[in-house]
Amino acid sequence: MTTTTPGTRPANARFSSGPCAKPPTWSLEALSDAPLGRSHRAAVGKSKLKAAIDQTAEILGVPDGYRVGIVPASDTGAVEMAMWSMLGERPVEMVAWESFGQGWVTDAVKQLKLDARVHTAEYGEIVDMTTLDYDRDVVFTWNGTTSGVRMAHGDMIPADRAGLTICDATSAAFAQDLPWDKLDVVTFSWQKVMGGEAAHGMLILSPRAVERLESYTPDRPLPKIFRLTKGGKLIEGIFKGETINTPSMLAVEDYLVALDWAKSIGGLTAIKARADANAQTVWDFCETRDWIANLAVDPATRSNTSVCLQFTNPDITDGAAFAKAVAKRLEGEGVALDIGGYRDAPAGLRIWCGATVEQSDVAAMLPWLEWAYHAELAALTTAA
Image (cartoon, rainbow, N blue to C red; front, side):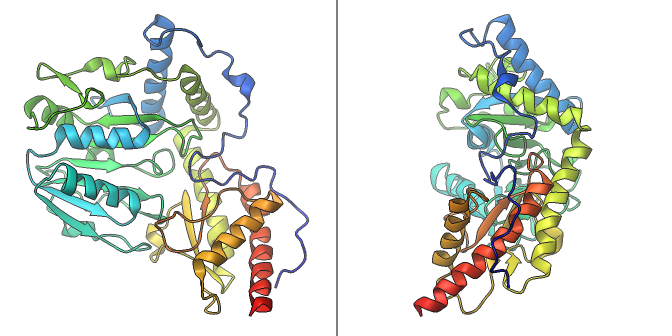
């Protein structure tokens, strides 16, 4: 039992799952080259946006022939653009094992009213992706940000599929291997693994996705910000830095700074390794305690970014209140900010372990977590 206040504090107590911690070398001064007060359609604005697109593709290893674009409304906007613009040509398999995936299910079934078959799993578990019909379009998250459960691999997705695979990869991109040949649409946002600012999304299209856009016109009205084609052809400007609506050039500069940092430390291999090491630090901690456990049931599907935990002590009768009290105590000490579990998830904690977090900060925070747990348990016993 840890009753003594730990002596070491994290240098950075930010463990939020979005917006996430800035890269360790980040500073406001690093944004001084942002072309503020300039049009994003001016040469300088277009060049910055194109640089963000090109560096994203380079670091992630996006294959030649795929399109990478910057779109409005974060990852949500990117997923919605894909769903509204592409779905309906054939039946759909909708997959959800946490709240964001469930949101796409709701849109497909209640808003778009598609011919959809829904596959769900409880928090901590994952849908058996081998049971899906890949001649249908398939919509799924790669990493469940609110459940801490991720796809272990994409081997079950056939190369000769007739349908499209639309993958929400917002807390997976830059931290986990994405098999590009198995994914036709990939979306994510800057504020997750790269610690960028909110409101901007990334939309990556395979040649098969482009073919769908240019050959299929859905029988529904499309808002302007969802339109990816004009006259039956892809709007190529979206994928060259000519964004649909006005982006924040300050946020673009911030993303470029994060991309430069990733390249400087060794690119994708290095940033994935940082996330792996952070998550392993938390997993090792849980393995040696009998009062806390990973929400993900199968170790093979544990997320290395959004690590979701639950208290397992049977004496805790109100898990939600207890988890909230632990998170509040840690925030009050200034050692762990914003680690409460997602509102729709089972009661517990969620610790962001993406690449911008330092392993030393994770290691310094965990003794405080143990201290807060025992302090709240003692308070619970006293109250009883």
